[in-house]
Image (cartoon, rainbow, N blue to C red; front, side, top):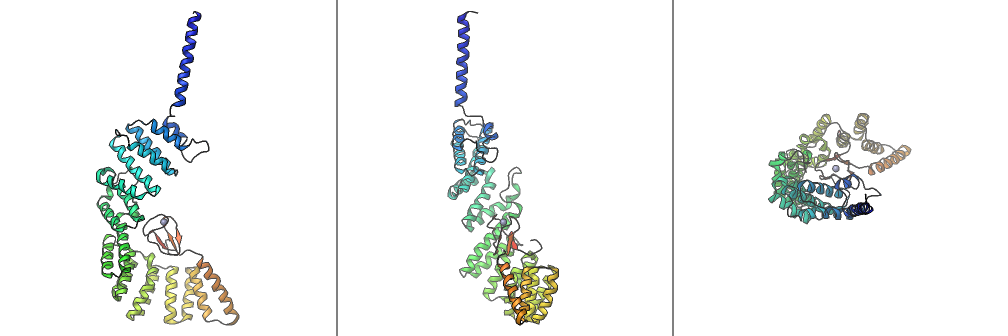
Length: 400
Ligand SMILES: [Zn+2]
């Protein structure tokens, strides 16, 4: 081999190596690299900055279905990591490609709407979701689910009712692979009933009792188990002076969900007092206790006995029941009864015990969500923690 030929081959090898080296330095790394590193889970210390990755994605984007799906998935991962700006950029870049297949275009729109919801840009999300409902039937169920989220956040109950009604007949048609936006316990009928209750509450507060009654009838038609509608109807009828109708509405709660029985007693007692029929109240309490013995019911029966039979009889009843259904509230009630009949040093001791038990009670939540565990002092119909409807109940029942 001549020197000239050897020199030529060496030069060609160096030139090829230089070109390949430059390409690898300037080309974006393959998508699989991002998934195995940057997007495989929680951020790592050696992760490249997200902006650089997104630039690579946008530059190297091929507009075929498979690649677009990969980019959509990557945008979703960014959103889950809290990098909503990056997710928006990826999904907007995709939608700017005129040759994007329709299926991926629809999917990217839905994900962009989710990005906007995460960013709190509800108006923009609503615009995209309404467009999806109008023009892309394949995603309209998921889009309606997110529209409900938006209208609930904005407390726009009229629009929420429209959307929930559209979801009613089609709720069994969700694609199996898609996570349904409304789980079974958060079905459209249950939500619809609560939306009617929201409007009914507003109507009652503005003095429109007839309007409130009509809305509550609709709530019960949508969801016959809606305890909230029965409680509100009881209040509306009481406000109207229709005490028998109020009693009828409130006693319906026992069939709907006995866990809410203690929430009916205060108003029920007022109704029976107005009717001059305290005996029926007592019978109802005793029947309910036999059906569903809970500390709250024991406390209610004992409170009723104080008026009917005196403190001594109520104290005996309470002491006996507390052995079976112990509760701090019941103990505090018993201490209160003992306090009323004691003097001197024993009275001072009971006063101290009552102060302590009241402090303990004040530091405890009274209600808890059966779905996410959120606990608080008041009954919320829409859980502030998980946004489920009707999942919060009084603590102390059989289910808590
Ligand atoms: Zn919850």
